Length: 298
Length: 256
Image (cartoon, rainbow over all chains, first blue to last red):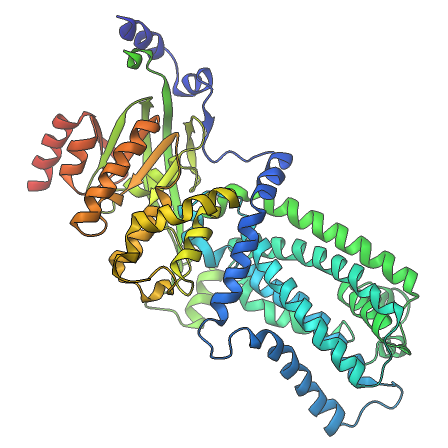
């Protein structure tokens, strides 16, 4: 009896109205930003487990296993040592050019690999996205965490190299900690941005190597930063010197080296670094969140 | 009877689902052909759109078990994913009470990692807390039976037979309680012994869940578990009603 009564009452309603009356919410509705952030925070254990699982599984096929985490940066530095230390024989106007160079290469590579893995974070995990429910930002964040962990290992190798080239350990080395924090935040934002952009426009992946090489030459990694002063002036110089990676690299050199020639005073560099990481970190997160519900479509 | 209330739990309102498939271009994939395609603004041959579900509407009520049937590629799995909110609808809407969970056997896990770490990872991905994972881990491995023939749970998953990994995946997915439960072919995994165990587990999950959707090609499991049936064909609903009637029509159709 009741059934017919309710059924006839239902019959007059549109499906949308019926859903509203019974408090059903649309599947695939975009969660609000605080809601999403809370969800993501609840998934921190998953992000941790997923990133360590990725490190283990990527090295699982090799004989040396986790040793590669240390070996990769050492070999990387060795290549530059052979070319710039032995073959080209240093740089006349730059004291301790090997250490100067290695710092640039390592800090640059931290962001470079985050961009590359970030662009694959969504497209490479479509199976998981279509099968399970979780805040999608977990995937690019986990990819970025992998790179942070690799960079921390690389930092210790880097400190070894810097010591070997005759630099003393000073209190300034402690500045590496806030620098790591700022660059990590910058990278998280950039990784999130690349994850959504790479899932929308797949052709981007073909362009990343070229963009990164351009960025490399614009960040004074392979030559002294003073070179820019010689050839550029006015707003062009300011644009080049505001480059976030150049700022991070300069700050790392400031922390580790005694006589590094910097593009700006450390105070200006710290302000630039903070602004860059806040802007990129927050905007990258917002951009990724806006696309949350579309990632399953591929 | 509590059923008299007829509380809707899932409502699909003229839902359409389109998804894009990126593939290596077949046939004319020379740079010149691609360039011509770009300049003439014709559709990209590398991206194909599949209109998998075309205007599906239904209302599912609390306490119902609904079977989805249809030939291969008729959009059953796609519809389930959309109900779970994993695939976005391109027009129309799907409303659901709480968060429907998809119990699939193909949740991606990492092949290089041992089974026990995959259990942890899978449970965390379903939103369990680390303490819950610790408590359930041994039960899940025990239920999957992968340790019946030696200590397989500490070996990488790539060394498992396909039946073993399917069993482990099902066990992970079935470890959680659900409001609206969506089951995709999960009953067909493993050997006869495991199938019996998993059917029991599904019945148990059904008692706890409000509404169950089941996609299966096994007529027997649909007849056993579902009283209502929706027949999808080419993304459209061909019939929706009592299992015995819909099944009769479907059988007549597939025999043709």
